[in-house]
Image (cartoon, rainbow, N blue to C red):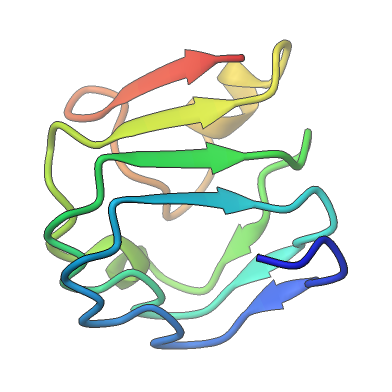
Length: 97
């Protein structure tokens, strides 16, 4: 994804069954509803923003596998695990990188 991207629109990757990994550029400030809906093959999400982007609703992550690893910048773990509308840290594994 290009580094100049600032938002992910609703359904942008919805139904991308073969999507296995994605890196969210540091400039992204918002993620739309159902952005990753039914991305059944998603194994890794790498967030580069130190502040979690605003997520319009929890449906952004509908049906991503529970073994999907969520990578966040070092020092941002608490911000991401407590951010509104993000996958639950009791179900998903968050890792600082």
